[in-house]
Length: 124
Image (cartoon, rainbow, N blue to C red):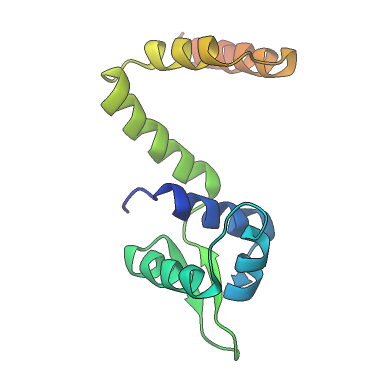
């Protein structure tokens, strides 16, 4: 499956938040974040359908679109691509870059520590 563009990610975020939605619902949801016209949203969804990023239910009068993959799967694919292209495959450089570019909350740091502990225990 190809990686989504920034605009496609915005539309996928709507679908992951709302669940299956019509073009009108997606357009309305994007209204505050984007100046896209209804026809642009429709065309983008048609392109995303061909790319395999969304599915379309044509049973009703209005077509209903849904994300083909869960949010976490898509995020992992994007991270893997970024890891390879920008960090030479180094997870350490990716994590250090992420943590040094934006301050993590105490909750986020606790979650990161927990994940590291889990990963460490798996390798024992």
